[in-house]
Image (tube, rainbow, N blue to C red; front, side):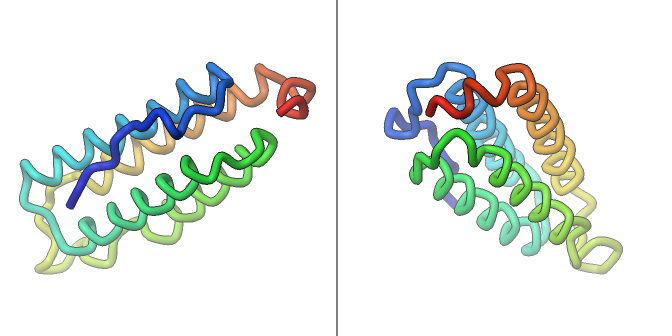
Length: 128
């Protein structure tokens, strides 16, 4: 598994958006490190792949800034529909804690983004 890395091509030229997007890339890179360090279930490996794929698509798409909230909603739905992982409480679960860490870190990121979207207001969002 290749971790997601920040690329200059992901830049939007809006500093607060770029900073937030770079943070999610760092979160996913940190999680990739945890996945390499700890034994985990295949479900976590698969879910991580889905997360990286969706975030990478989002960043490469350079969608209009007003669609930030739709991506946030999509990420929330991904977390809600995939977690807890099917392996939880089965023999396949390795009790690695990475699924909990994934949910915690991404939900914190989403909460910070929501505050940022509210702080910067609809006028600034409409400019892009």
